Image (cartoon, rainbow, N blue to C red):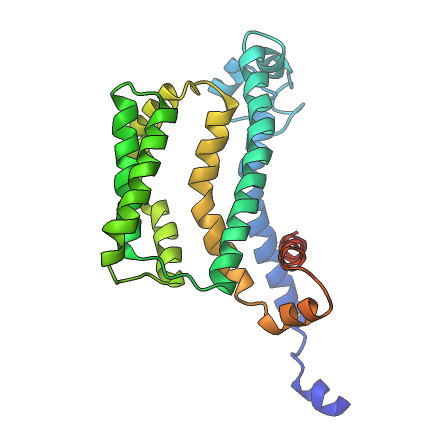
Length: 262
């Protein structure tokens, strides 16, 4: 058996082939890393050196200076720069965590449970959502608009919605979610702006977090759905027999995905 594996193993490249491989890989690494190197050394140049260049080697082609860093971090642009970095450090982790939590739960439900929502219920919900937007746009308080729309949705769902027999499946729901990524963001900028203006959320962290979570949720659901579908259901059944709850199994799946991602 050992001889069979040795005979089937891939032969090591010749010395010339190894040298050529390292040369090609080294050239490709240099090609990829050079823009980063150029970005770093440019930050240590003054304006005249940037315009007169190119200068490649610090202390040889040019004398490094911290004027650009001082201008951005301490000078006139320090307030805007530090504020933008602070906003990113606050909004990005929170929105990512919310999108991951909601997306993972939705993806797990789409894989492990069967949904058959009726088309009539879906169109009724969309119509009531449009109704709430219209009511808010004409000046009605959003609390009253949502209450009225919810009541209309319940009434229509119990009457007209039941007449539609056609239903959608899990794959249809997942495809609809990922199709939202095809929508150009510029097409919804004005409606989102008006919505946040009516809700008095302009220039707030809440508006940024809601926007980022909404835009990233479809791709999170799609990716997590593909990953969860690769986990055999027998493993979860064994864990359930051992006494693990549904929530514990779900979070174990998410932690396993995070470990593999890192």
